[in-house]
Amino acid sequence: MTRLPAEPPPGESADRIPPPPRHFPGKALHDDVLMTARQRRKAAREEKRQAKDAAYELRQKRKKEKDINSWHGHHIVDSKGLAEAFPEPETPEFPSSTVRRRIAHGVILVLLLALVATGLVLAGMVQRGEMELKFGAGKPTPTPVTCPGETLDYPANKDVRVNVYNGGAAEGRAGAVAQELVQRGFAVGVIGNARSEYLTPVVIVSGAKGHASAFNMQRNFAATQGGSEYVQDNREDASVDIILTSQFNDLVAAPKVDQTPGALSCPRLSPPPSEPASPAAAAAVTKP
Image 1 (cartoon, rainbow, N blue to C red):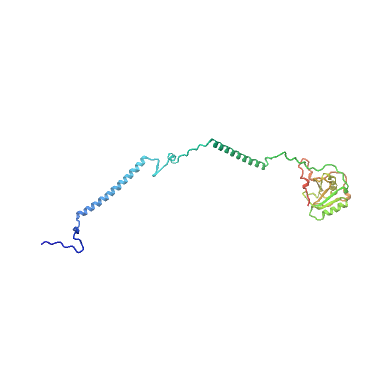
Image 2 (cartoon, rainbow, N blue to C red):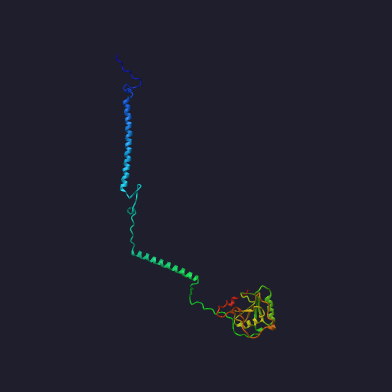
């Protein structure tokens, strides 16, 4: 009796192909799988060996070639390569006027530098005193100040006009001396204070016309130890200035004044006339 095929369940198509019958592989299929795995491993080992051989052959080839333009895989650029990569710019041609102007500028710059260097050298020589610059005709050499050497007569006291100044620290000294001079017949004018750069006890100042009057004053103050100093200034009259410093003591007693002819005493000009003269007499006395 023939069995009819079973009808498909509801909802399924009757044309569905049934799956192939299941079967379990045998020993032959297991051997085929193992063989394929062995072949793959062998093929992988062969490929790895071939890659090593190729790398080795490449290294040997590079060693034989000895490429000087390569170092550890980096390309070395030589002078030719640099010239090709950075070509020199073409030198522009300037017109002749531009060339001449540049040459003139260079010459002017060199001359200016030379002038500056010369000025620095000359300034250094002048500063060190090695050279003296003179402009114009120059100043005339001043006549050395010397002590008047003429012999002078002792003039009468009434003909002498005198100004008395106190150049020391003691107060009232100029007034006391002026009073004494008035008693001796001198014509006393100004009584005040003054300073002098000289250290003698008495400084007597007059002009060229007052030599005789200054000689009279020196004889009246000769008693002071250290004497007096005569200084000539530019005044035009015959008046005399008397400056009493801190070293002044007293006048000569009137009866003992030497009235014989003589010359002025200038201790500061006592060296020979060949030596430099002292400062101008006008700067010796500073009046208030």
